[in-house]
Image 1 (cartoon, one colour):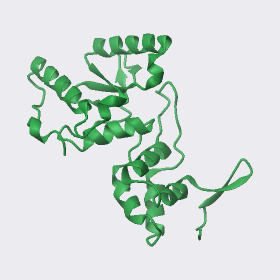
Image 2: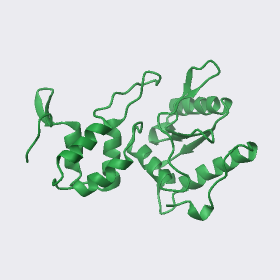
Image 3: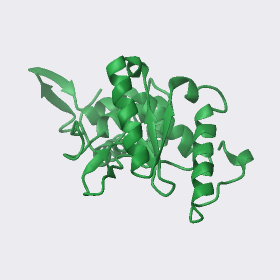
Amino acid sequence: MTFLAGEVVMHDGVRVTSPARTWLDLAAALSVDELIAVGDSLVCAHDWTFPHPRTALCTLEELRKMVGAHPGLRGMKTARLAMPEIRVGSDSPQETRMRLTLARSALGEPVLNHVLANAWGQAAVWPDAAYPRHRIALQYDGGHHADPDQAHRDARRCAVTERLGWREVRVFKEDLDGEKPFVLEKVRAAITARAAKSPAATSLPPAEDAVG
């Protein structure tokens, strides 16, 4: 294997490949969606308005340059297919999976890193993904959300979301399974309910087009 300048770095005294080069090397072993999830993890960043700010391990531009610098590397087809679907703001592989499921449907891609502000303009809720046009906040709840303390925080989060005029949709692992994941029906139902209350809401695409 050959490495260009900057593709090998020191970490805790050990020489390792850079985050962007590691991502490209993984293209030879992973599926497109798995590589998208890795890319999402590397570029994920949250600014100071989030409860837990996060700095990206690399940028989208660094990933693009890495792809361009190694046109003949094994796995390049997978890398090129994954690159356009990597986004900043996804905290976990399951959040990536949720986003991709929605983005590839007629419902369209949700927005990441969207913050709900209160009447004073202060950040109040940080949904995992959102449809701002419909005021829909998506929250992916993993296994740890069964913890009583976390469940209490989730209930409070939902109450604040509703008070701000948004509708919260909680998504679970099983909602992402199958050929026609139930998350599509959940989001469609939420948007339909919002549209019924707001004449300005955009109408939904036909149900038969829900899966792209």
